[in-house]
Amino acid sequence: MHVIVIGAGVTGTTTAWFLRAAGLSVTLLDAADLPARGASAANGGMLHASHAEPWNAPGVGWDLLRYLGRVDSPLLLRPRALPGIIPWGMEFLWNSRRERFERNTLFNARLAEYSLRELRALQQELQLDFDFAESGILKIFQDPQSLKKNWAASQAMAEVGVRFEVWDGARVAAEEPALEPIAHRLCGALFFPDDAIGNAARFTRELAATAERAGVRWLPNTLVTGWRRFQGQINGIETSRGPMAADAVVLASGFAAPGLLRSLGIRLPVAPVKGYSLTLDLEDAWRPRLPIIDDANKVVLTPLGGRLRLAGTAEFTGADLRMNASRAENVLAQCRHTLPRLPEHVDPATMEPWAGLRPMSARGTPILGPTPVPGLYLNTGAGHLGWTFACGSAGLVRDSILGREPALPLEPFLLHGNPVGGQPAG
Ligand SMILES: Cc1cc2nc3c(=O)[nH]c(=O)nc-3n(C[C@H](O)[C@H](O)[C@H](O)COP(=O)(O)OP(=O)(O)OC[C@H]3O[C@@H](n4cnc5c(N)ncnc54)[C@H](O)[C@@H]3O)c2cc1C
Image (cartoon, rainbow, N blue to C red; front, side, top):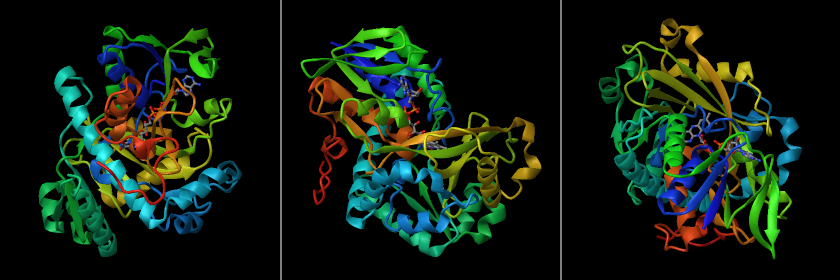
């Protein structure tokens, strides 16, 4: 059986590896010259089952209205993007009802748990070099209400195996000296010992090279333009290099997936949500030892391979990849609240700003597995959790192609699955 995987981000590359490891013949292709040129290039690096909540939490509609057009806010809806995301936006808001949000959080948490187990097994086998650290992740709070809300959410996730500890400000300062200057402002923190970090782009490129050595055909600079069908079944694709035949195709093209599906009459509720990161040099003495999520300022600070990566912001702006200096500066400004002495110790010349588009499903769970068109499978829509989900979603898609019993029920992640009122299974 020959499978073509479209998109060599972290999702597609991991899928290609899992399929090849199961003995299938695989082609992995991408419009770009290298794997991980899209959303996987410089993300926050967090591998966190603890953070499995979809972004469409109850009340998100009010937050979007409150921040409408405000460029200094962590959540920005550009009025000009509104017409393009109306159907997606309605579904996004509809899924923010408490019952659906809580269910989808549990689906995500189970997938993330499974994914991190699969990642550890893969790492045991392949020993890839991607700044992987089993450091745990620290989430800090300045507002008692937020701490209480997150503590309750963490208790719910503890039921699916996500362990956590509650730390006070003194413990935070003792465990993470970089936070000592703001420890007096903290009302507490949650520490998730089983979370980890790693450089998604390095992982993707190392895995792509390993997969190529194991027989995966890697085709860079190959734009997919359409589908080939025989008797209603997908039997190949049209590309900038000409037609290619396949027994099955996995679409893992990130935020671009809905465009390719339109000609098949499939509406995929996935939209781009822009985020920014800054990677910079910071002396060991000032760099946090632990990865930090600052709840109040909506940023993550991740020590990655001797550097520090700052990431954040969610901007509904359509498929617009332009670097907006004020949004990148906004990430830095927010991080100054977390590490007040950051500006004194950073050489601006070492700062690498980046913008990426998260492929966000309106449901808040990724969209995986078969479609109504035989031979076509999906692996996209992971939003802010694509790195965390990569190995788990690849495992579920592999099992679905092979007709194997999956490790988790696939139903919550199917394009037309996840019905209202169902209970999380598994
Ligand atoms: C600022 C920011 C911080 C983040 N932090 C984290 C984090 O800490 N933890 C976490 O788990 N997740 C995080 N994420 C989310 C995560 O990075 C994404 O969910 C993930 O990278 C998506 O991977 P992907 O492979 O699905 O998409 P992509 O990496 O975008 O890959 C899609 C690929 O498809 C290719 N493609 C598209 N169309 C075509 C076509 N027609 N033909 C051929 N190729 C095509 C593109 O060139 C691209 O290479 C973050 C995202 C951002 C933006």
